[in-house]
Image 1: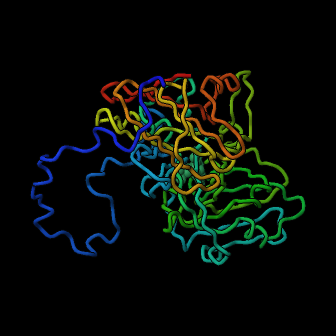
Image 2: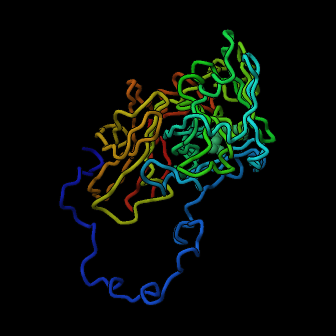
Image 3: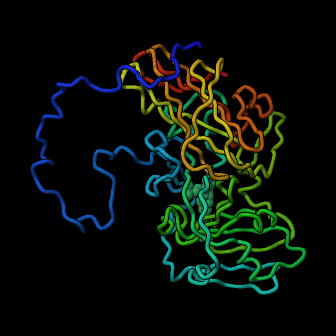
Length: 406
Ligand code: MTE
Ligand code: CO
């Protein structure tokens, strides 16, 4: 195997320190003084030693922070659930701070009875809980022409994965009664951008939800409190936050967000529209540029995330030599359709440079392409829907960089 790391066995050097290391003998403050009592922290926060685990933005990316994006710190997370406080945010008109008692959801257009719902009305429909990823179509959009941003937070952090509690959009639509020629929906947000997207009726009736909770608690204002549309497997832009209006129509509306934006400019200069579903994709989250290998050679955990808008992930392969040889990674934790999957490859690192890559396959048989294979079809005019294979170069000293090997 090139690259020189062998699969790890039960016994491996370098994972523990020899006895006699003195920290274990120290009497630290926290062992000798009493701590805060219960109730001191009515809403808990992470340890102060985890202060660096935050959303971050890239200043030069957008003209101002009102219409901008912050990125999920994927390199510091594990498992499949994104904690609410670090879910990436993408706003086009800032965060709407909505008083739930003054919020309504209207359904009108090609329906038998136009209706206006309060939050309480929505919560009286049968509820369901589902774990789904939300990926912005622009995730990895900076990487089309080559490696650019040095951190998985910035190259892949426009994704989060939470458990939504909500009601089927179908129930709410059926309450209003869809007319036979009602084939499309227009969903509109209650923020200052009044974000609007057309959604085909088949999808709306299939698995869309109106969510009011994420990971068990109310949606955060950043994520659309008090109501957001959940459009499983489809590009984040369609997941309208602060949802206030649904219009039923017989054709798409051709709004700004589905014509000038969120279309894929092809090599011949034509724009491909309505590429809703997110493609099969994966990335190694650690090691990565923000979390290099600091422990030296020996037992090493390589981990990452894989996801697909087409369903579950069936397989992830990892290469340590830039895609020449591949070995199957171990998928661990719950496997839900249109949710991220966590994978691991445990190696015994020999200290030689690594070119780390991961490649996912979904249950529909879609395989994540190399960046060259993707560019052969899409060219380099694109911003959106970049699911190419990412490479991290790990130097002998463990320092890790964004590079491209295609
Ligand atoms: N909905 C409204 N009302 N306003 C917005 O600006 N941004 C969209 C979508 N829904 C947006 C919106 C985009 S482009 C994305 S990627 C997702 O919300 C981001 O969701 P998040 O902020 O929970 O990450
Ligand atoms: Co987006």
